[in-house]
Image 1: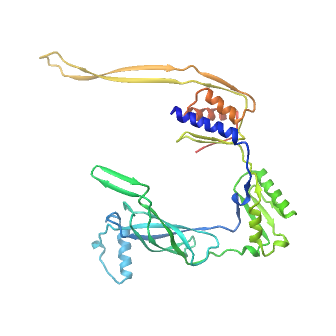
Image 2 (image 1 turned 90 degrees about the vertical axis):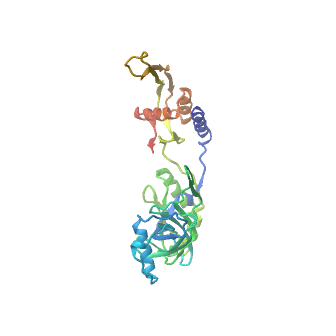
Image 3 (image 1 turned 120 degrees about the vertical axis):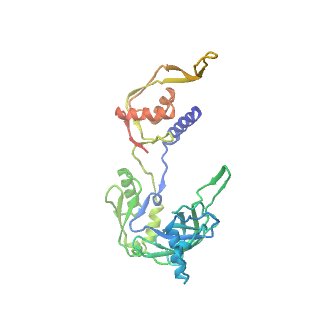
Length: 368
């Protein structure tokens, strides 16, 4: 544990030394274009060809699905006579990219919804994939690849990845195009930034206007920027968006401290500042040990052998260490101070929460 904490502290110090050099990014990496979006698809299907790893008889919807499918082929089978272990009911999901055309292929993910043990070696039967409007936009079918396996024997079992979730690369054919506005016919476009920062939005507006040599970009709010298409780009909006996307900006972000209490992970931004504060750190450890002892009766006496417990309690309190941070302390000074008091990962989280409660941590504290 001590080595892990030292590694975390060293990594945070590395960030303080090299993280202050903000780098420029392409605008296309931090923005979306209004109206250019994909859609999620979903469908219900059957995976066949499993080797006794499919749904059991208690999964009634799988049995009903098999009966209904066979009836469409002219085969009538009583429901109570269907006992299968090589078929699994699955939910099929996919992402339909924007402006994709009919006939193109997309990847699909297959997830078991019954009590199937594995989809390894199975084949998905023809499954319609529907959008939020209920219309079929793609048809999926093909062999399922799970990228792992599950094996079980007497008293031992091994599993790699999730055998009840698989993927079919290019497993669906697009049958319908999602109606979307023609970009080249637009006279005004709106881009949405991924950041929530006024200075970044203002910087993007200035960068676009400097490139277009005019007052064409205007910030609508914290995220959205409206761009009036110049006359030179009328009918060539796609070309305009391509050129704008290659422009470089340097995003600015608010000061944040993100804490994951489950894993002991602490991430602090470079703009975190600390007011003058004193940190006292000390540990009180209490150790309780119990030793079982056997009490034997005298020979030929009516007594019985009993087991008693001897309890010992030891308490040890370490001397508290006090470190004072100056006014406007930086992230590096904070990390070095916490390292000086010998803080562990859990102590580091508790100290940061206490500093925030005292009003000395000038950053947004996010606990996930």
